[in-house]
Image (cartoon, rainbow, N blue to C red):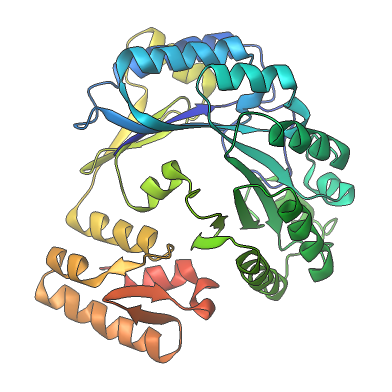
Length: 375
């Protein structure tokens, strides 16, 4: 079933590694939210299936918004779409924004899952990333959340940067596990162009990343979290049984979704849309009934390659029978030849007609996907 993603394009400060669309100025916050509410109504005919299985507030930092503004957005969604009875509603939050009052308000309006941007339990790491919180705020936020009515809590952690030794990373994992949260996402730090971190490394004020360090810490994550009852269901994601992210699982399974807000993407099976990545231009276009997004009609090749890219990352892998039905004989022959090469190099395995990444292959998922693409 489809989902709705709401992009809240505001942050209190800029993390050194982040290349997502956001602004640290809140001057037009109310204007942007008003346009988001209008876009919710404009997009209501975009999907064929009207039943929504998940709503996800991402960003940016959605927890910067008042409960009143979040509730207005949810009210707009409920008035324009039919939500499934067990709909998953997630909000991303920073530790410094968490309070008992906010949590109570969120649960009253139907939010039942929270993703907390912890990143590290070490203050020196948080300073390196230019995060806006400290370790004490993380502990306080988690204590409040665990005693609340929200029973689906996810923690984000980042690994693979120079000062994070393997022992420090293991300590971060163990601290997350002690809180008994239902879901943990572990992301290897990447250096994106135009970010402060990219320029720091380029001018020598920060050390470059070490891929071997990232690989070692990824393997630590797999082993430690598995031994503590977490299922590794996607390369970066681990959950207790029954607590996979419905919203993100649907992305990887190529379910349809609507993206609302500046820079948000939408997908309906045949085309992809992406909104303007400028808050002012987005608002001006919405307010004046002008086009506020670009559209790409997906070719058969696009659709197959996206299926390969997303499904290879998951524990379910690629269904070979399903994939073969989309390809002609020449395409599938080339795919099988490349698949055999990668299997001989121990990057891929097959289990019950599903093509899966090996542990070694998980370290090279993106390049393996590209090798398997139709060209």
